Image (cartoon, rainbow, N blue to C red; front, side, top):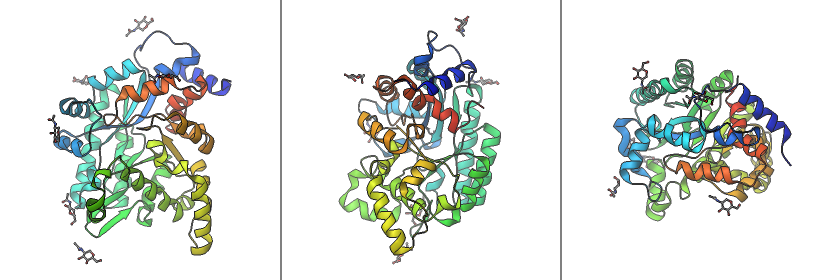
Amino acid sequence: MQNTFALLFIAAACGVAAFPSQNHSSTPDAADVWKHKKISLEEAFVLPELVEHVFSFPQPIGVSNETFRAQFLDIGPIRLQQMDDLGIDYMILSHTAPLAQGVNESDAAEALATRANDYLGENIKNNTDRLGGFAMLSLHDPMQAANELERAVSNYGFHGAFMYTYQDYSFNETYYLSDPRYDPLWQRLVDLDLPVYIHPRGPGPRQMLDYLPSTPDLIGGGYQFSNDVGLTLMKMIAYGVFDRFPSLKVISGHMGEHLPSDLFRLDAQVDRLRSALNLPALHDVSYYFQNNFYETTSGDFADDLLNFHIQQIGIERILFSVDYPYENLADGTKWLDNLTLPDGEKAQIARGNALKLLKLDG
Ligand SMILES: *[C@@H]1O[C@H](CO)[C@@H](O)[C@H](O)[C@H]1NC(C)=O
Ligand SMILES: *[C@@H]1O[C@H](CO)[C@@H](O)[C@H](O)[C@H]1NC(C)=O
Ligand SMILES: *[C@@H]1O[C@H](CO)[C@@H](O)[C@H](O)[C@H]1NC(C)=O
Ligand SMILES: *[C@@H]1O[C@H](CO)[C@@H](O)[C@H](O)[C@H]1NC(C)=O
Ligand SMILES: *[C@@H]1O[C@H](CO)[C@@H](O)[C@H](O)[C@H]1NC(C)=O
Ligand SMILES: *[C@@H]1O[C@H](CO)[C@@H](O)[C@H](O)[C@H]1NC(C)=O
């Protein structure tokens, strides 16, 4: 059964193009127009002076070092050509990890985030119908971060903030996003009605002492990334960030970093801890997933998991993304194109949910 509402929504969104873009391919009909108009929002670039950092984690099998490097550096022709070929209408870029959040000194960290925002903003200027950005931030001073977010949004039309799970300060100081020191930043996001995309990064210097002796190979996408974001999101929930900021919107990639796969147990255990330890969280974990969270499909092109998450958190909270160049753009788009879901539902994941969340059709 087609989702009639979604079809109407997409047809309407098409009539009034969100982005006056060039012709992609033959005029599609309403049922599969999404195939040519996908929006993706976890896609990376790198500043030229940091390009060797992209080799911190391995590239997709079959992609040479030269291609990988070129794909990261490119904010123009290589990306746009693939987007045309694969039916991606609009892509939102962010800088690969950890950028300013990996810099101990606040002045240097703040300068680096500003440089990345200016660099991205200048490089997408000629293609704002196809490319957008998320603001990169230093989290040393939350008020400075809030101001930099607002500057990047007003100068370059960025769509929200992109954050890694913690800020480097020193060996023994690691403040995760659950720390109340970040409240001014959440307040600004709420005031601007913009989301924050929370992305994994490698372990900090102190956590590295635990990983290195036993599990060096699982640092990164092999497991540590999901552990990193999953724990950060659970800390934000448990310690009341979403009770203080009930309209804060968080996007996480990689299909929610395992959490929406296990809400039964998370609800049961957190309920128990709430009463035993007076955890500040007012609601079940599921509640926050159904009110504050969005997930993307980045790097997790798994049919059964997608169907399960549609049941668990609702299709309106699931958005398409690939995680390019760490993943092949073609793998993610062809997976979505080929999914056995009604066109109306694929349209929501491919485009409709992003238009609403990021207010792109406004
Ligand atoms: C787009 O398609 C229209 C109608 O087919 C055509 O008139 C126009 O020249 C095309 N524009 C470009 C840039 O190809
Ligand atoms: C690719 O780059 C990595 C990291 O710099 C290096 O270890 C590896 O040997 C390179 N591979 C090739 C084929 O040059
Ligand atoms: C972007 O536009 C400027 C002028 O507005 C032009 O000088 C520059 O070559 C353009 N860059 C690209 C990549 O099209
Ligand atoms: C930041 O400080 C930690 C701990 O003192 C150190 O291990 C790390 O190398 C420093 N990072 C940078 C980029 O200097
Ligand atoms: C970190 O803290 C531990 C104890 O809490 C202390 O033994 C150690 O010296 C500290 N390390 C640094 C680099 O300050
Ligand atoms: C598309 O889906 C069909 C069945 O659902 C499967 O047999 C086929 O391998 C898929 N193709 C791709 C490119 O994923």
